[in-house]
Image (tube, rainbow, N blue to C red; front, side, top):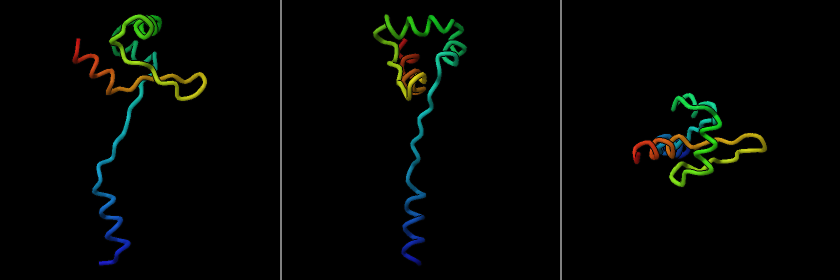
Length: 73
């Protein structure tokens, strides 16, 4: 078998790790609250996941972190 092809097959077998990020609007819809409530949770609830600033004006929350927070509730 061609070494290059074998290398590509080995790379294809590696698990792909993806992260999904949600906006404040998406989180508000998920929990049936306002965007302001999401931001209040972020600033006052020590157990609520920390938002991630992806760029100026673009802040998101990691979905896995939110799911872990839900499970702990």
